[in-house]
Length: 368
Image (tube, rainbow, N blue to C red; front, side, top):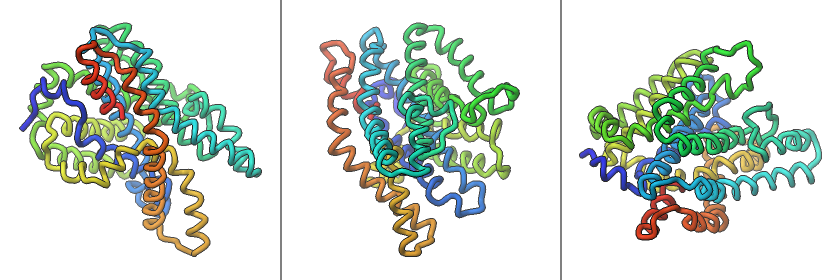
């Protein structure tokens, strides 16, 4: 049964989202550990996991801000940025510190490349310049940070105009470069391939579901318990596009399919894929997916050396070893390091005094 809009607005955590995060991060790890061993273009599209991450992130962040405005009458950008910093920065800076140690104490070409990339990664602009070391994965973190700097501010400064005028214009501009518009401009590769479209798509979904009319429409269309399965089939069909270059309509179709999956899992949490998306290993991988993303290339090289030493050539085994070892490292990091900062986030959950505890818990669960 589809939940009511009122119940949706008070939902503290969406049961399937950790599962969706898990599938996304496993696609990324697959891309970096095993995809090159296969000739299929479909199996080389693990980078789409980042697109799905972006959609989920845009949806959750803006949902959080919309609920904060509803509960308190305003949005504290200061508290928002403090909460985001406590979630993102500690692990990110730890990874950069490890990269700096590698560059300092292990001289060579790799060291030089890391030193070149470190400043761009540190200042969150690695999506705007060519990156040559394993720090190239920080382009997605740069994208998210730039999103955090701009969209919440616009949303707060123009609460009425943002969803009606600003957001559609931003999304329209964001999806133009992959269609070849501005082709004569010297745009970074990121803008020619991905841009901020997926995040803004998640933002748009947050606004649609926040409104009674939008909720009713999507609940009617996607409220069947089989809808997520059909949405995944739609995504699989889109991903099967045979051409190597998926810029433009093909990638947009894939992103829209991901948005449909997310919406179908939110409007009706008792759907057919619940046993899979809430299965403990999948759910747990999703919970620590940020750490897995940050650490997985650090784990990659020791495993590659170990496999080379023992003459193991199986790409599937390499993927499983990389995922399992990175998961273990992410769990240790989450329990012994990240959790210390995550507990501080509740201090910056803006809410009226009478509902402070409830709102703090809502913000903590949605942002984790």
